[in-house]
Image 1 (cartoon, rainbow, N blue to C red):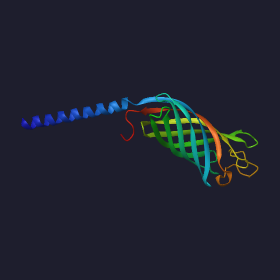
Image 2: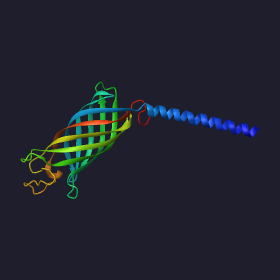
Image 3: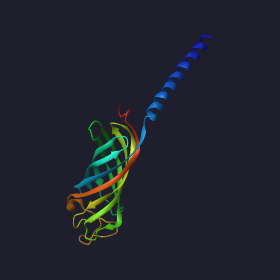
Image 4: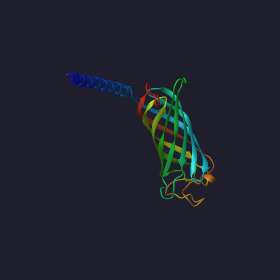
Length: 203
């Protein structure tokens, strides 16, 4: 009887403990909220190597759970290759700061920019590219989100990038960072995901 009671007592304690853990985890999960937003940014792409750019992004965004914010991005962009001439892989960090400065949220992730085939000015003034990011909060919140938009990219003469449309001035349809100098542009985009402000990553 004593062993039976001891077994029952241990089973009961474990059951209560597990039940409490479920309630705690449920509370954390339940506090995550869906959010959406829209933003506009300007950017500069500075050549680092013949195959990479440093992509610095700054602008504003309105997020449903945060209100008006500024955004800063620090991203490395890989130049498309002849084998995959329409895709620009990206990896980096994005930071949201609320307008009153009371919250700073940082996220990291990867992205992909896809160039159009005919969306360009024949004089080589600009190119239009679609982009997508998958990101996860690493500071200030937990959760993950996506960004989708398009960019208007100003191109230097002789550095036009339009897949399938050769730049006759250089005889190639790939930008060469070592000779193109800084590239600038503007972008607009939408974002959506889940955010838990009460359970920041790392807390």
